[in-house]
Image (tube, rainbow, N blue to C red; front, top):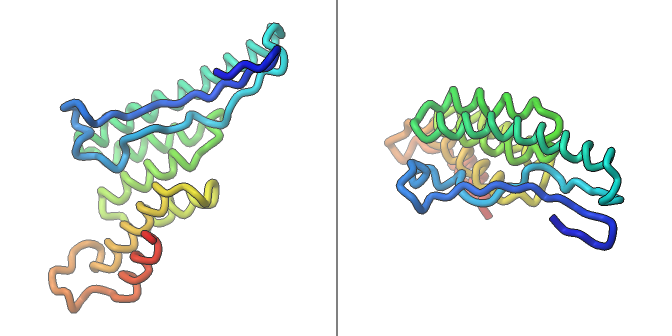
Length: 173
């Protein structure tokens, strides 16, 4: 919360910590700090109706966060299709207005299932929302890398699609 005179801005965030032995250590790609939507502005801190509106937005975002937590729980135990469902439910809640976070989580779940085309689309959607979101570029590069390896199955280097591999490298960069 930032207050300036009679105006305030609330920027809800959450953090996924992998330092404990909680299963996230094997899911480093989803750990770190995330914003729970765009900041909520209160023009007049003493305006009861405006505060109530802010509380309603926060409640909806926490509702979305509940689905994200369900998705994360499934992700941690390797139930990636169920994780994708949970993240998809969170995406339906309009109050979470920085959907690039959810698209990246959807992409990560698809990536774990070796659904490289789906993952690539999720990361592309994240980048449509925020073209500076580095997590989306890393995921997209990983999806291209998986596709380059014949959907992650190529064991013979001669079967790797060099064009997709180069696209993957360019995306990482």
